[in-house]
Length: 231
Image 1 (tube, one colour):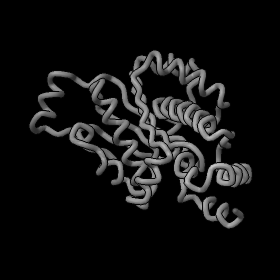
Image 2 (cartoon, rainbow, N blue to C red):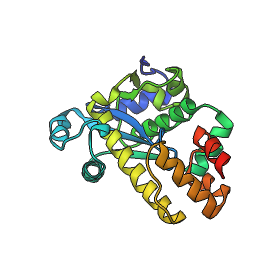
Image 3 (cartoon, one colour):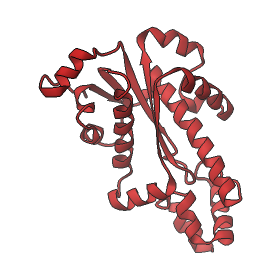
């Protein structure tokens, strides 16, 4: 689903002064299925002429890479390419979820901000995101500048090289933030939402009280309800 560039007002003047660069934006997120840690949305701008180089770096869907490999590639991408990271920490996440009551709307807000952040650095005519929920969520969340580009939303968007790069950046940042949250609360915080995560949540509450969950966990997960029954 796309949007045609506007021919009115400042948007037209801006595009005349700063022609769109040949390339596109990719966005992806990490942490939405993890009980502990933040939600991270990354944006990455890929110039058409850089596709071969980025592919040679080993860029592909972060889910197919080890955590260490994600970190290695992310370090290279952050040094040499236009990118952005939108981090929603657990406390902010819980507050936003209480207001929105809809994860897809929160994701749309994050993806829209990532697109806007990239557009503030480089003029571009297209962005590719993964499709989640109603396609209108991201379109409605975009501000004035973002509404002038073509927005492509599709399933398995990580097949796109720019989206794959964004997925690596998002995962690496999630892992870093999760590690430091664990340091702050004095215990390891596992990834995902499995039995180990529930055990860690029980240990955390017994050690620091139930209020500790607000600082490190996404409380709307069903894990919270199960954990509270055994405390």
